[in-house]
Image (cartoon, rainbow, N blue to C red; front, side, top):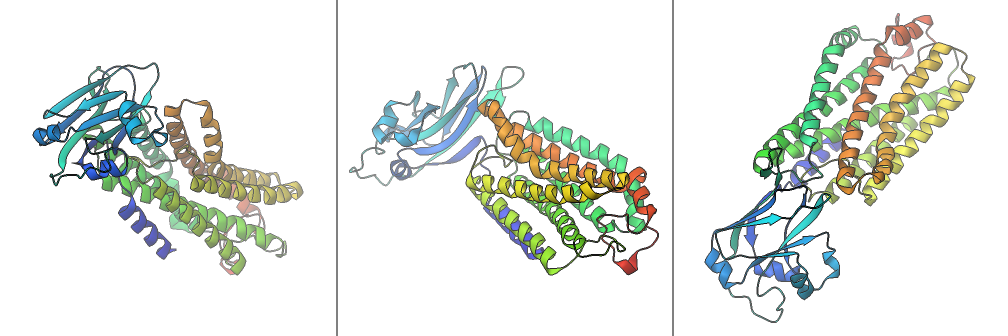
Length: 432
């Protein structure tokens, strides 16, 4: 497990890139020719006050090369030839000054725009490109803020995420204030669910760290359009480790529960078994999940902000299929157990545990399917916000279940047989 986490850390911190909406770099004639226009950035404008600002260090060289920026609105550029791209641009900005400002017209709904660079050599494949130095540039892409001034670096599909992460941090703080005392008592006592408490606490703390890093990154991003790429990468890493921890805990519980129930006599309590079969299933599921997460992250490496995107990439689809499959496995086992269980308290325990697990497993697939009814610029926000909220609520449900004196402690005090999903060995059972 430690080696897997190290691999995740290296892949996320070294491979993830964050470019932002203040784009700096070099305008290169050879790159523009190779790709039929050098891609600069994309941005979704909304409302009035949209603005593109381009600043050059050497406008004389730009004039000599007949440099230009091409702006496209909702255009499939892959189907256009080089000459067609030059003709069909909605706006063409001829670069001949140190600074150019281009106002974006208002549209009834948020509209995606792409920015490309081209010059006199882009479509002339037979022409020799002179050995001129590359052009240094800075491009700012801005939406209007609440006062109507073009100062907002967030694209339409990103607007509101900064406020959401602030509210989520507030939620974590309130939950911490509510549960810190009973959790501390439970951890100091030990008992059969001690390891579950530690894993839940670790996963929730990592999720809180991810939220804090995202908030810091977006707070800086809102001011300069670049943000703190390291904080964004750390947010992705902590989120991935949190998910892997939760998945390992739930698989270990469910598979140990499933495998032990069929062969254990009823006089012995249900335990988290470390049998080769349950360990293989848990570790295999975690490794598969981690690989799919890394694959999805690689596919999204050119995005400014990582999230639970509504796009149906192969990695995303496989992740959702894995979650649905695990939820179906849990449901089938629960149905067999609850249908033969006579104790109302134990049935309530199983059902509450299932609610927390089902919410964690199924929130992303359900939200991705639901997001199709929303507008394009709202889908990713709906999925990202919904998944983070559902996973946090799932952790709180499990906390309430295992800390509740009215259910868990009452069930566990009935007899040594009444405690489901315990992690203690038979000879380690005490008064719990």
